[in-house]
Amino acid sequence: MEWSQYWQKDVVPFTAMVAVECSGVVLNILFKAATLKGMSYYVFITYSYAIATLVLLPFPFIFRSTAVLPTLKLPLISRIFVLGLLGFSAQLCGYKGLEYGSPTLASAISSLTPAFTFILAIIFRMENLDLTSSSTQAKIIGTIASISGALVIVFYKGPKLFSSPSLTPPAVSHWSLALGSSQSNWTIGGLLLALQYLLVSIWYIIQAQVMKIYASELTVVLFCNLCGTIVSAPVCLLAESNLSSWRLRPNIAIVAVVYSGFTGTSLTSLVHTWGLHIKGPVYVTIFKPLSIAIAAVFSALFLGEAFHLGSVIGAVILSIGFYAVIWGNAKEIVVKSDDSGFGSFTASSSGESPLLHTLIKDPI
Image 1 (cartoon, one colour):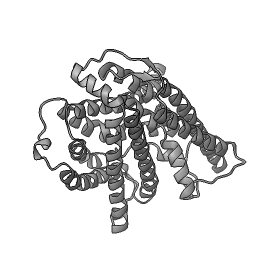
Image 2 (cartoon, helix red, strand yellow):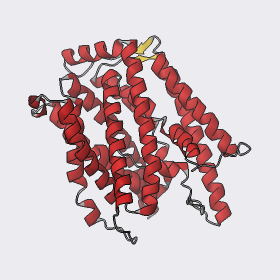
Image 3 (cartoon, one colour):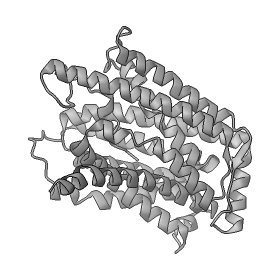
Image 4 (cartoon, one colour):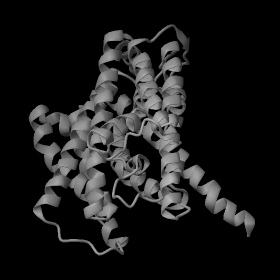
């Protein structure tokens, strides 16, 4: 009985969180390989949104919310549409940045999300800035460290530490290395990825407001993807006017699109929501820097990507900053919970959303 409980409460959640991080890295590698084969990232984004919408369509009906939900009125619909627009814009920046950079760079820059969200939460007055509080000090120091680490990764590659023979065809590996070897391409990719996660952080802020009004995550995620599909289809058709590019052939391109539709939004959202209910928000977020190591190994194996000193130094600094922000917010939530008389992580009675509660749902 004890072993069964340990398996359900510890082993399964741990395995699920690691699997989600791996799936995100695999998605980036598949996208990189597909674009190196000539696939347009406009086509990739549109098809991914469409498949994700179809996959998510039955879930709100299967897993009905027990909460009493308000009628979908124009103010709420407009906010959900803005979420879809932000998610689409973030994907445009992210996948273009991935074209210029690498999956390892994308995984490293993604750890900026807590820092960006903390800054935006202060701007939108969702966070109280008490400079005498150790939790606030930790979040400020962590934010500075995260941004500093990202700057090191983006602007300093440094000497090559290791690389391995790629498992992909030599032509693809050569193209990948040629594209990623330029410092200017690497910098442009890093800046675009940083812009992506800034947009993602804005997405989290608006999503937190939407969830207060309409407390059905599956429905909100479905409508966000539907809006993303509606926005991406005409925009990407105009951007990619070559109709032959929209014809998917049975190669790595179709694998990347289908994989993105099933795991990029659908599976990730479901697993993160389940993990939140089982283990809490801190547990879900602490696995994010793990994707840097996973991406480094997978990229070296499948894309022949070299790992540079700047990436190691920057990733270490960024990870320290990431965990400092997470620790500061976790301590703040514990204090609020104790003051409210509860022994678990809960939102404050003031209606403000703790930072960690906005870090668990991926829009893309």
